[in-house]
Length: 229
Image (tube, rainbow, N blue to C red; front, side, top):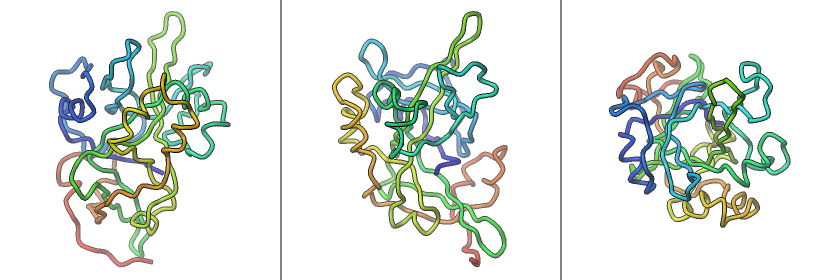
């Protein structure tokens, strides 16, 4: 699964990386080193006019059919193996695919002294493109909510010692096909959601990241190794 990630790169650079138009009400949004569920994050998707856009969406999917968004389950992750059959996701894999550009994400490992967070990023230092699905909830007289879930798959060998699942990564070479919901069918899109073969860097970081209120570049700095259970 994926419960926290890092988006400290300026959004205009994310937009340039995925060749998208930046759409935001904020001209200088702050860097985010500890993005938590039910907060906004940058998401790349296909716009209605066929262009690509980078927009802030809420992390935790509110399905369009929900009667009351405050009582919705709001899943932050979705298993890539079952999106074609689950009612909440099967239309989204056809029509509402997206990517979440991140600098890295966090995973936790149980040790003798508690849960130790680890930071995972591409060895190349380039942004990761996490596969996602988005949806739009709206009712008459109520402000619409646009939200997303991150798709997960089996963990790569580097991640398996921490957790058996990880975000599905979209390779830059596959980005056009993944986002092109008009030209790429759901079956072809699902076939892209495989354990990543990308070279990853994994290292322990400060436990300050465990609290969502904490922010700052020190959260992704390497921390001393700790004893494990």
